[in-house]
Length: 511
Image (tube, rainbow, N blue to C red; front, top):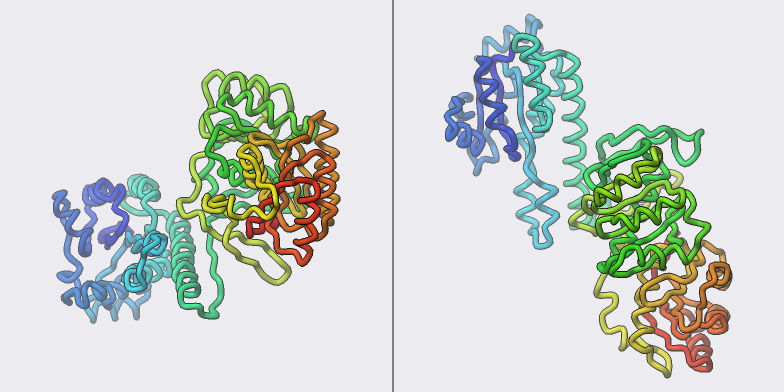
């Protein structure tokens, strides 16, 4: 059946005018509502207001306008069903062959820091999801468009089929509706579940991003869901793997800790070297010097456009992925000689960084706020000194550098740092003293001195032994959360060794 009548009511008006004009050219009658109708009329596109079509006025400040039998009957009645056809004729219900609807911007509204409960409630769409679901249920006869990105496909299908759409397209668009409305309802439920402290279920609905070759290991199937591609663009190289994606995400969260020009190297989501310098090649040298073995097959990220000198240095080792906000033409030419190396442009991070960190567990999902960068964490650190000797300015800078890194190292985590680079990293050990020993050994293996370094610990030292080992290795200052029942013993050990120590009061476990 040709699409003779379309109902259009959208919040996001991207591409709408051109789409509606093409529908009119194909002799499609348009019914519309509110602001959408006003826009179409301004553009001289003929349309019928919904109240004129139904014979009922929009009431309750527009809350009720499309909830009408002429709308939902026109969408839901089964074409070719004699009983339905007769009832539709009896009640003056005409077929609506297409619905073009996108929903009130609830998620954008509640993302605002000053959103009120009343404002959130007013942005809960009722008529839109109802029309979408009615149309999608009857997708065998009705074309339903919830995403402006699908306008071109719909028009092409109609041109190729004498004003009709194919069942295959209608089915795909119908599925998209149920995914969209499920996600929309989930966002509403999650908002109220958090704001009103109810005991309702957590809801999550994400679009299919990509089907991956396999998971962490070849015998595991894997799929990417969500909008990963809105934050990263692959410029070159093989298809991304499950592990690549994990590493890219970890690398991006780490590099966002730094505002100064910085290069970081990661392996299996753990940092293995970070350096900062106005010259990116010098920053790379500092990062690479921390550990020259682990970066093989690793991930490299920088927070400035990647330059030719840095590209030459990186090209000397095998890497899986290189990430930057941009690549100089000369740098890209060098790196693209390696056909399997993935080059990723880091486009952006979510505006609202307090997004959820989700972990799957047996029988469910754990959800928590993400441990994001907080500049205020470094406010008034001088007032958090717990030792007799306060740190020097250089020591304070080294502690802050180490603290930014250690939160991204698997617990138990220890980082030895200077003011602009890592010197030794110990990750994922069952005891903190073992993590410290590994960091010391890694520094020695790399030929780096820990004399005058800062030690950062993601959680408190449960015993003085970790701090004593750091002092013996050459550290002169320490930064840790504090909070152990043996804090006084640790402070005493620091004072005896003239170590300056800060208790941040913030823990950064990373399991």
